[in-house]
Image (cartoon, rainbow, N blue to C red):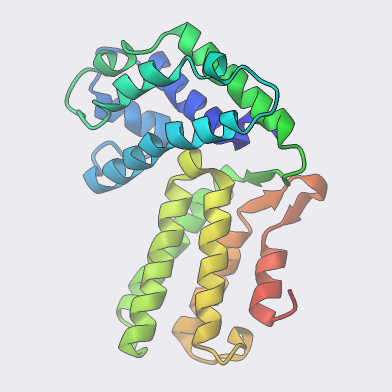
Length: 245
C-alpha cells in the first residue's frame, strides 16, 4: 500500500498543496485547486472541505493502531492541523491565514505517520483510481441524474436510484479526499440497491432508466483498479449484481 492510499497520506497531500498555493489568494481558490473542485461551486466546496475536516480523526486512529510506536511523537502535527481546520470554511480569507497554523515540521510528522501506516497495512489490497476515467464517469453520472429525473419509474425507485447516483457523483468528486475506497463503497452500495428493484437480476431488466443506471454503475466501477494484478473493481461489482459473489 502507498502512503497516498491512507487517510494520513491524503491529508498530507492536501495540506502540502495548500502550502504550495499562492498564499495571498483566497482560500476558496486554493481549496478548489487542491481538491480539483470549482472554487465557485459553493455546495461542492463545503462538502469537500467537510470531508477533509474528518481526515485528521481517521488519520489519528490509524496511527494509534500502529504497534510498538511512539504515537504521541507521530501525532505532533495534530494540534496545529486542528487549528488550521478551525478556519477551513473561511473561504474569503487569504490562504496564508490557514497555512500559517502548520509548518514543514508538522507536514513531515504527518508524512512519516502515513508512511508507517502504509507499511503496516500491507495486507490491504491497494486501490487506484484513474483520473481520466473519473472525470468521464462524473459526466456520465450527471447525465444519469437527468435521465432519472425525467423517467417514469415508481417514485420510491426513482428517489432511491437518484440518491445512489448522487452518492457516486460525490465519491468521484471527492477522490482526492476519500480515495478510491469512497468510489468502491458508493458503487457497491448502488449495486446492492439496484438488485432490490430488479428481482435480483438487473442485467435482465428491460426498463431504459434501469439499464442506463447499470451502464453508468459499471463505468464508475471501472474507474477503480485493484493494483495487484490490475483487476478492475467492475469484476466484483458485476459478481454482486449477478449474484455470483
